Image (cartoon, rainbow, N blue to C red):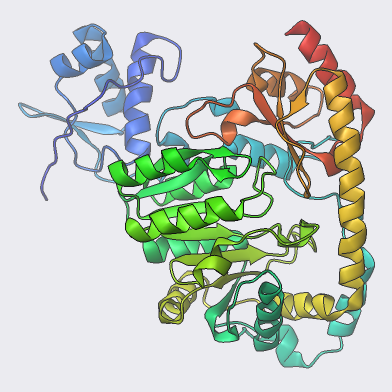
Length: 475
């Protein structure tokens, strides 16, 4: 086995882990091991080099190394130095990269919202309240499905997924200008699984991937799991900043760009046709593949520009699901892509999850075929428009100003009064059973500390605005 010696090209965070200097040095080493920067068998820097890097005394590093060796994390080899122990610890996403805003990073927001009880207010979550969803349609479809043949209730789905649902999705996509035949659509367990499969297919660890800044925070989390280099491009009310987009393509040669086109998350912005054409032209010039997440398609009052529509699913792949408009418990997503990519994606899907859940696909099909779904979405768009107007007015009254007034959807991306840090306010309100989504969890550059995303469907309780106003006054 080749023993690798790791040389740190940049100083480890001297404040990592808090506590004594020894504890900080130990935490820095553990962070590198958890993030696999230090692999099993890797040689640690010499005591002198590490002391200089960390700006601590050599005796501090000696004690830290001795303690880590006693714990079995590293091994001392006489005359050779210290090495990472032979067995790698479980891969820890939280150990990768700087621990900026760690208390309220994407994993913190996700866990707080997913684990919150019914008494907790969740204006920072990304889904609708249960009573805003078509429960009558769901119950009716479940009753009908309970009488289906045994194979429907018990068997795996086919590799591509339920054909009638793929046919229906193709017709729905055509309404937004995206031409995709049913055999170009692969059903997945969720929109997140769709993106994960595409990352497995299109990129390798160490590749560069471009995202919007800000963007949906789980894009950051998933890409971190794939161990790629992530770059951000500023997002404007009409799409990515084209000047910055062109510069980063020329300078960094990213393999992939992941974005929302319709009702961008978190900003609520809408991609303009002019910007869409420029993005596609630059993508062609720089051999860039684009993944377009269209999860909020049904929330639009009328269809906006789609990159996949202009591109014809050549350089653009579209993904989506119905978890936001139907039910998050009914996991069903899709990928629409070039035919010559579908076969390889099927193999990856089988390797990752074997078969699609047939029961969920049958349930989605039954609801989408029911005329009640269209009526539900018409009513939901009206209800959300009213909630956006009311929430915007109440936020403005306490000095929190929406960046834009979105044309649809459930989100308001808002600027706090000058000088306030959204992460600080999020920590304060969590103690009052209110989960918020501060701006920097969406921002790769960490340049959105003065912003916060509000879910208007989850922001109707007056306690939210009382707590926010109090926090602003104290700020």
